[in-house]
Length: 111
Image (cartoon, rainbow, N blue to C red; front, side, top):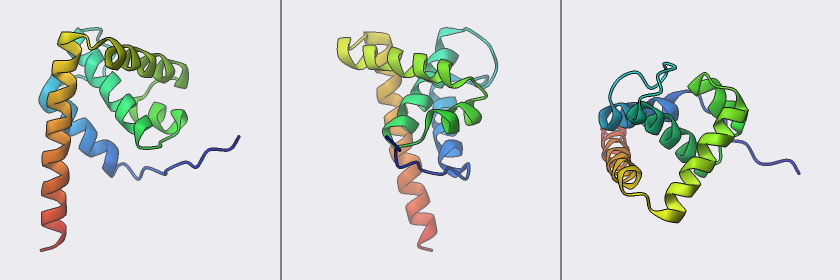
């Protein structure tokens, strides 16, 4: 079962990373286990997966083993299923930031 894989030139990751940093703070790519930074990593992994990126591609961007990426995505699936309050707050802010950056990049491309 060969899945259609999106290649990421880094720009999509850069957008998601910027949005996650705005919401969760700096240090997402460190090994810190602070809740906000863990959430930042999870949200990026989950969003990239939703957008069709492979586990390996996500892992490369987040500097994590693909098994860690699977775990992050599972944790976010639980968040979506059970609507954990704190996690959903982060997620909603993250989605808002992505929208802002996407709108901004569309308007600057046209100029």
